[in-house]
Length: 452
Image (cartoon, rainbow, N blue to C red; front, side):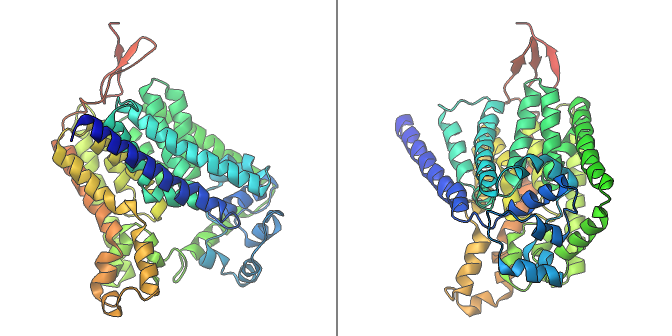
């Protein structure tokens, strides 16, 4: 295949994935504007602004937007105390996230949702372009267009935007943090990371931990300081209003993860396979919740220990590979939904844009390929519709292997990334970024005097 025909093929793939991204992301959200993952934090942030308990079900009802019809089950389930368990609302987002989202609460619901959708789409596109910039690629490069095509085809991004979940902007903020730091803009990097941590610490915490291990004190210090200020502002507002929010937060969290709840990894139905943490995989095999939880945490701790050891024994960093590994590791032992796998853009960027060996590039693409489709959701729907014989759906391997394929795929990817980290030298393939008379060496993040 000639270079020209290869470029045309990749461009067509990019157009096709962009179309899929638009249809399964923003267009799907526009068709379901009444109920989505942004509704609860939007209402809760409004409750915070007015000094009400953001984690109480009655506040959710009281501050329900007037331009959105409230389903009848909200009142009845709130009265019965099962709203959190059945619907996942009010969501136990940290109070810092409500402070960050509070500007949206001053907008009418539909305008706020459309604004949030535009922000989410823009951040996804900008994060992909930022990764190209970090890796030294221009949009005219065939490999760069292939990377963009795969990014826009990732189903977790579609689901995140289609459900208006805050996870997607948080992933993009982590990319923006690294991009800003490599441009020498440490203050900007720290602020971006702080906003990401405030919104969703389970998603952004991996990058914060990376900066701690790599002793990037400037970015780490700014991020922690800004996070603390935002959290203190949120707590102070509720404290001055005399709201017993901490007890409500604890009770809401308990109900969210109670047996049979929406976030219970032992649920009998297939909805639990929308979670991608290892507890789902181990429970499907062993049928014991305590053992599954211990094994998942032990696996996560072991892999994290290996990552720390590999990083500490290196004098220079393999930056994108290290961030890719810790990002995937962060998904394993702590509760995560499918859209949190948007963090896979990190290993995708490293594998497609920086890894020199074709076998590594192919392996990374193969490991990420299952996330081009919402596999467990599709298979679960087909099983309910009777399209899959009951002899298959009742077998042990249907739940243990097939429906949990994304979970064990992430575990294998994490192990592979650690293996490559053990064998890979420092990222000599990262470009040298020049800014304000300084030169940042490839992958090191250390500024040196520029001879130019």
